[in-house]
Length: 484
Image (cartoon, rainbow, N blue to C red):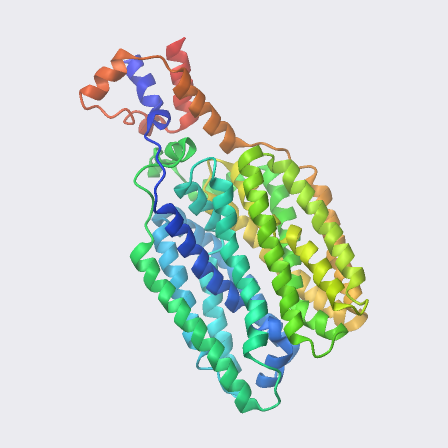
């Protein structure tokens, strides 16, 4: 009976691991509707001055259209993360894409200057959709992709969001010129809203057809171990408490919030900063935002590939954080020089590291907190980012109004310096990599066991006992003991 216990204990190590061809379609579809949602986040802020005149409201009111994404995420994180753990990826994908399309259609009812409350309602619905989107990249990567491509997959998943922000900087200034005629403005705004609603609806239909819950076989040993754990054994609240007792994760949560919060504030206020120093350059302000995001996407891809090859999570995160601080300082002191090409160069350098940091934080958190749910850990990271994002956007906006753009940017520099120092104290406790390594070593070292063969030939599933004992490390321990 003891030998059968040992055989059952290695179920996660002996489970069939196989990559699904559908994984790339799922990843591309998620990235696409994430793109659409991110576009709707920044589409107002990128032409802040035009919407201020069209709706006859303050610049601060338009800033709140962007900040609504951050505010709504905070209280809804835990219910949505609970749904992700209990009901899985497909339900969350359906809800996120459906709300994204619904919000886009509501905005079409706000094409008159007195209908600002309607556009607020549409933006709030899109902000609700974002809650179902932001925590997904690391979960999709873990559930669908192998251990040697998981960081690259997470980077591509984040790509969609970043590309949407890039489109949000580029497209609105091109579609909506700065005209005095309100009727013409309404016509141009309607084109943008109709295009967005059409794309969002098509993506929702594709999610219904294509998006699956999970592949037939686990893609990695770590994922096989998680899938073999009985549902009753998992407690969502206990998972959150374990995360909040993890000192390394708490440090990462604060540092991630500081970095991404600075990025949110910079994105929201970029148009105001550029136009303040370069009046009438709305289109170039959008292009500068585009440059920040596109260079960041390159940084994210390079960092994802680098992590898959080297697994140097702590060192890579620290270097990228330091370079984000350096990039922010250079951008701060070159913005007012009077040369737009200099702003393009410095903003691109800043974006390469600051935006490239986003997937690093998700993947580092997944390593530090394994086997906890990636949806929960990434959700807590995003809550931190939203809180700091709201505070930095309001604080920097007020400082800019009173003391100028340089003082506002120096505020962000000071917090990036604090985040850099705190990142240096995070220990590289790579639990997910250790679990994969131990399971692979267990499989390679396990001698032929005739009792196991007899159990398999008799129809007894080798995972039956693991589900009662729970987890890959427990199974590996039993196997090592039986081999001795």
